[in-house]
Structure formats: C-alpha cells, structure tokens
Image 1 (cartoon, rainbow, N blue to C red):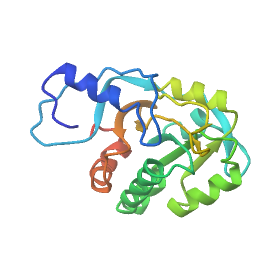
Image 2: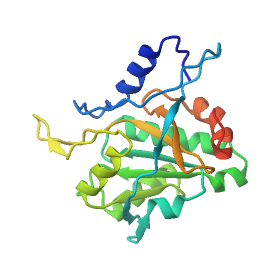
Image 3: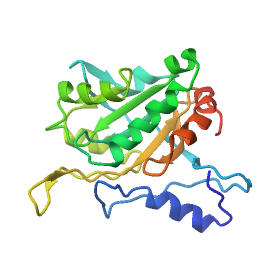
Amino acid sequence: MRKKTLLAAALLTAATLTLSACGSSDESSAPTVKVESETDQKVATVLDSPYTKPDLVLTDTKGEKFDLRAATKGKPTLIYFGYTNCPDVCPLTMGNIAQAKKSLPKADQDKLQVVFVTTDPERDTPESLGKWLKAQDPEFIGLTGDFSTIQAGARQLAIAIDAPSKDKNGKVVSVHGKQVIAFSPKTDAGYVLYDGDSTTIDDYAKDLPRLIKGENP
C-alpha cells in the first residue's frame, strides 16, 4: 500500500479510484481503509471493511450461465469492470495482470481466478469478449449480460459505472471505475483494492503469491 500517514489521505486515495481513464463519474463511495506505517511503498489498499462478493449471475464467453459467487467460492479472485473497446486503462490493466500471472508457479496460476465484467454488454457479446480476453490470457473469465444487473453488481463494490453513451464525436464510451478488487480464498471477501490505472506488472507480481494464500500483500 502506498504509505499513508493520515486517515484523510487514505480515504481520498480510495475515493479517487472510482474515476476511470475511459471517463469519469460523479457517483462514488469510499471504503474504509486500514492505515499502515510501513516504510516500503506498496500500491495495495487493504480494506478494513471487506466487500461481500457480488451476487452476480451473468453469461460467460461460452454463452453459459455463470454464478460468480458459486463459481469462485474458495478461490483467490480478482474482479475488474471494463469494456473491450476501452482505449487505454482496460487493456493496460488486464495486460498487466496477465503478465504478472505468468511469473507464478503453474499451480498458483491454476488457482487464480481473474474475472472481467463488461460495462458495455450490448457490444461485448460472449464471442467478442472471449476473443478479446484470449489475447490477454485464455484462462481469464469474461462476463456479460443485462446492464442493470452488471451495474447493480458493481455498486455492491462501490464501483461506479454508467450506461454506454456517445461523446461529442459520436464515439461510444463507457464510464466505469478502474478498481481491481482481490477476494480472499479464505473468506470470499474483497479485502484488497488496486488502482488499475497505476498498478504495474511488478506490483501485481509481488502481491499475487500472498493474495493467492489469502494473506495481506
């Protein structure tokens, strides 16, 4: 976690994570964070009040029903909300996680669940979402479905997303939070938060071994 000496600074950091490089939103909700005094700089924010895993039943890239809670129960899981036509933060985030995952032993790679939930379900069909994720990591899980269901799931994690709309140039954009949330295999609670826009491959590579065990990074 980046060194925080004041609670106010920590809360401000958590709040800013609701803004995405793909857009911005006025909707935000800052979780309570644990203030640490380590001298080493880390990017993870350990939540003092972990999130409950969203009650989401969507469609995976094979066109099959996917119950998020049931399918990832007891497994170390990273969840991110974004869309495949995102020009910057989404491919950067997923690419960084994919590269960091490759540094893990095969057994740990098999344990880690990485879930990408689209915020643009009209364009991100199971087929197109699967094709995009395959270029990142064939084992990544892609989910699509009804937008209102997806938005409700994101809100359970204090992640703001808006329905896709056209900008002044007529381009369709999707405004979404850029948080990556890690869920513990021990409790199934979302207890660690990352800023997808600034967390690097090395940052994930350092933390993943501990996250897979359900430990604090």
